[in-house]
Amino acid sequence: MALLNDEIVQDVTEMLSDLSNEVKLMVFTKQEDCEYCPQIVQLAEEVAATSDKVAVEVNDFDASADLAAEYKIEMAPAIAIVGEKDHGMRFFGIPSGREFPTLLHGIQKAGGAPSELDDATKSFLDELDQEVLWQVFVTPTCPYCTRSAVLAYEMAAVSDNLRAEIVESMEFQALASKHNVMGVPLNVINEGAERVEGAAPAPMMIDAFKKALA
Image 1 (cartoon, helix red, strand yellow):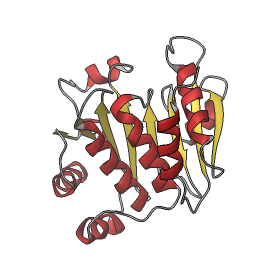
Image 2 (image 1 turned 30 degrees about the horizontal axis):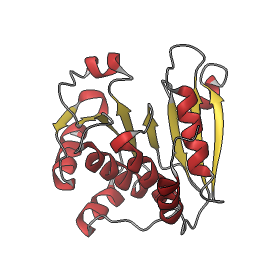
Image 3 (image 1 turned 90 degrees about the vertical axis):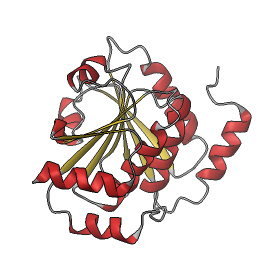
Image 4 (image 1 turned 135 degrees about the vertical axis):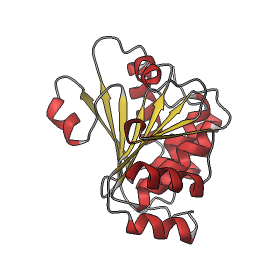
């Protein structure tokens, strides 16, 4: 049974119709303790079927440990959204519900869509010379999470030093507990060096990056 109905397929086809670069969805699954792995693979394949520029590569997280390490995938299930280059856009868990648009936005960015960031933000990212890991903790029902997740992907697409990981909190409860996720979205910078609650705008996130790197 298809996960995407005809109306959604039509919308996705339109959204991905003008990709200028090829995009690969590198899906990392595992054999045990992965309730949604089959659905994640199916979802990725159904999305890829809407565009001749999108392909899916499925890898076993444990059997492909070296490949996972190369793409800095430290847990599964996960999707690495990779275009002509790897911008560090990751989704951990199933991108369902309100987070489905986040996956599509990531594909658009990897596929060469122009940046929607303001000049000040792009200028900061152009000059960023230290690595930043931005983890956005989300849930599929959160009405505000997509805003933070999309911003993270937007910034990662501009800077080679910024990695954006969207983490579905319910699927990775141990990690969510480690970072004391009481509400979403929660933005965690460099493993907890800084944290910002809520759907923060770009200037607020830039301030958090600066504090985390100080």
